[in-house]
Image (cartoon, rainbow, N blue to C red; front, side):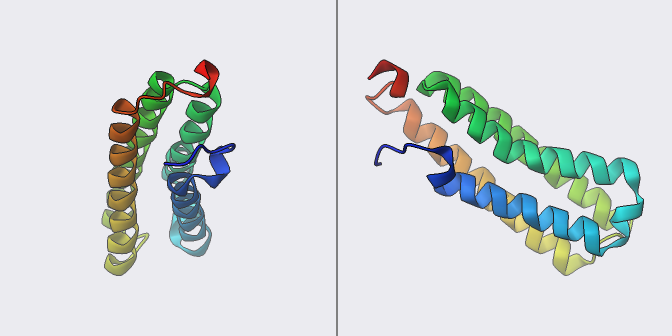
Length: 129
């Protein structure tokens, strides 16, 4: 893996941003916009996925980055639970639920692989260079 100078250039961050945007589009184009509590929860948790990647990257060390990637993964799982509530409350249809849920699963998988890569990397992080 090449050294990255910004979190924005990480593929996992790009995917997290796309996922967050998809959640926002769902909020604005469905009845979810009127379910204020659930809307705010899912908007926050999906944003937290990308925010934790950025914060972890900014720490400059692999151990801290792995910890924040773990938080990101947890936020993605939280978003999946909220998606199920959206579906059960008829805010989204089955196709939308499956599409977003699959995207969340892919993101969780990417985060897990990235964490595993960092755990086995000989490089400790930018702040140790």
